[in-house]
Amino acid sequence: KTVLGYDFEAGPDANKVLESMLCTGFQATSFGQAVEEVRRMTRWRLSDEPVGPDEPEEHRDPAFRAQVKCKIFLGYTSNLISSGVRESIKFLLKHKMVDCVVTTAGGIEEDLIKCLGPTYLGDFALKGNDLRAKGLNRIGNLIVPNDNYCAFEDWIMPVLDAMLAEQKEKGINWTPSKVIARLGKEIDNPDSVCYWAWKNDIPMYCPALTDGSIGDMLYFHSYKNPGLVVDLVEDIRSINTQAVKASPRKTGMIILGGGVCKHHICNANLMRNGADFAVYVNTAQEFDGSDSGARPDEAKSWGKIRANAKPVKVYGDATIIFPLLVSQTFAKDA
Image (tube, rainbow, N blue to C red; front, top):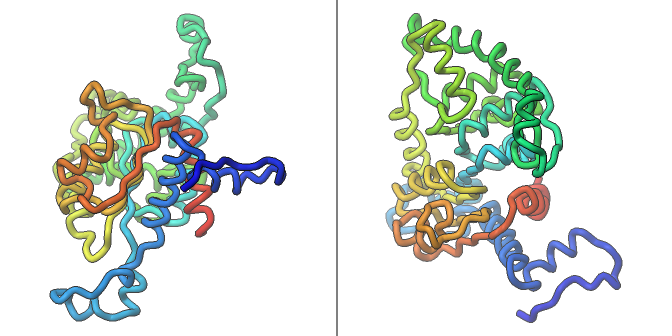
């Protein structure tokens, strides 16, 4: 393909500008390739594949094969929920466009807290000591008042009390994903990502559930009303089973950021010898050996992405990249 950008002599056209990225070069081309990879995920059907000799009889039915779609795992870090990317993620869950979600503790609590009080735009240069004196917390160039976390504590404590009572009286074995579903149900707000995950029965996993304000609340609750147990082992069985038993579906991964959400999804797909499709969006570099910065080719060496896959990494800020990616893929298919 020849390098060629958008010609503005034709007038402004945001859609055509985004389409031109594929042939623009550098990270613009990576963005265009990410669009193509997500389209491969969303448009794949089992009917695209030849019928194998060992497939069960029900899998041979053309009508069945035409309905079998790729199972899509979505991962994201908490800062993206603090930002306006929350609305792009909510769109996907509301319309059942992804099948499984992994995030961090902040990815849960910041979603719920936004239902209780707003997050404000600030500035990266605001002084920490000045903000602290005013009861304000900075997330990059975003500001969250302390009052929001106080409201969160007032809201969540009765929910934790009820969960502990159900654990004792009904024998419920709480896991992070069950806790998140319960919180989504209790918040009962259509602006919430957790609400739509609960409403549409989309599992949300958070193996680091205690690493944030929710962890603080669990810590406080353990003194006020001790005994609540959250089982990690049941959830690791659950997410790994999501991947292992995906067949005859293919699997795809869309991972925004790094850390826990990236590795947890990749490791689950290792259990099925790798995902068939993958898109990473982050700013991390690989030279320090971190998993966050690892390119998709490194994941192939572990069997987390299949050898014949064509994964894409976009080096960029997900607050810019992801809404544009959704606009060129999922939103066009809605």
